[in-house]
Length: 164
Image (cartoon, rainbow, N blue to C red; front, side):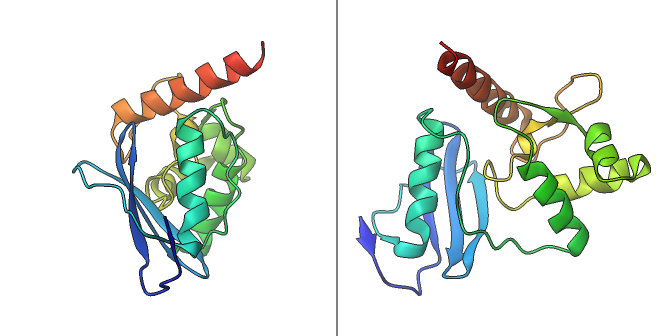
């Protein structure tokens, strides 16, 4: 399952929500996207993508709550700030766009925060699915609201099971 060919910079991994496309290089994981099309899982995985594939697999099996990966997402300084804040939302918890804006010191930045959230290049690893509307509603999600609901249910079921 391992290969050291460093020129290969993307792999595909089947998940319960579709095929994940993981991109990166020795500098870190730059993108994880969920695709609507079915693509077989990659058989050869470069060393620098191996941990991402294993951790995503463990997450979906309910065996991982926090990712520990070398990340290298591309974005503006503001987007990077939002993505860092998203990463601090605990597993199994949610936060509203308004709460996130307040945490960052400017509740009027709610639209900019939502926009940066929507441009998150690291599906699941930077948990933008944990951000909901102030009234508790599921709001827009690049991967589709059905996936957002699935991820929130997955995290709530896993965290509840681990309490007993």
